[in-house]
Amino acid sequence: MKLLEILECSPPLTREPLDAEQAAGVARAFKALGDPVRLRILSVVASRAGGEVCVCDITDAFELSQPTISHHLKVLKEVGLLTSERRASWVHYRLVPGTLGELSALLALPASGPASGPAGGSAPSLPAAAAAVPR
Amino acid sequence: MKLLEILECSPPLTREPLDAEQAAGVARAFKALGDPVRLRILSVVASRAGGEVCVCDITDAFELSQPTISHHLKVLKEVGLLTSERRASWVHYRLVPGTLGELSALLALPASGPASGPAGGSAPSLPAAAAAVPR
DNA sequence: ACTCGATATTGACGGCTGTCAATATCGATA
DNA sequence: TATCGATATTGACAGCCGTCAATATCGAGT
Image (cartoon, rainbow over all chains, first blue to last red):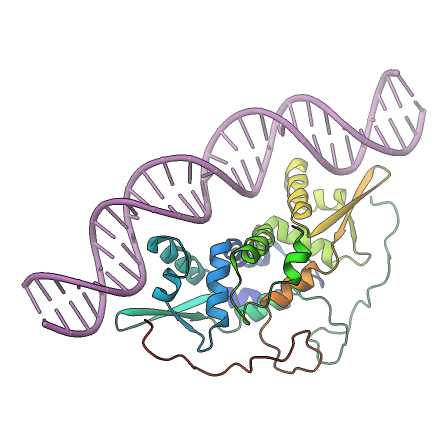
């Protein structure tokens, strides 16, 4: 299943627990972000003005072998965070639009100002409702 | 170094590339989120009304051995996402305030409406500036 | 067709990780 | 202090993961 579809039907963590299927899908994305090199690669792509990075730019921004960089790019691509396009000899990577934003929304706190928040106005966070004996 | 400190001095991915140290710190957090079980545990804690969950509640919400759950809780705690407090026989876990929000901000897209965004209003995302030959 | 530079794939290796059974620890209660 | 329930720790094992050297593929130019 595609990452974006999973993200779009996964509520924010602060809203309700994820079911097993959602968790499995989302975890794949976070696992991909769980490597320092991939995180840096992603930040290079995400912060690039044109939104596009040539592999060669990445390869010599890191002190890692070219196959290793290629491997990380593949991981980021397979999980649905990046896309690639070949132009002439060079391959360019860019963000898959939406995924970063959806991941961000998943972790976001419940909007303090309920002005434009996506949340239905439920659960005003009743302070300590279940203070009884746990079981 | 503590997770929150790292997060507080790490710019959003869309702003500028992470340096190696920031990436290493942040990646630890995402790595912890990169397991389906931990993600579900975290969502259970995050969505809990009182903000607190007893271990026993988690242990029998999953079909995993008690040591396994304990292990995952330890990982989430060591990485700085959860805290625990012992009360009587039971141990209660809660979110470390701020971390989820900071992680969310790290992944967030550049705020379209700069109304209440935490970002200083820089970088109007110049569209495609570097279109020249990659190298 | 041949060569060359850019990128991907393969195969191998050491280290990390998720899981469990067994055991230990820690509080409460008798 | 003896016991019991709740949680943590230990040790072991299979499987995954990051890295590299070697090699393959793919376009472009000659």
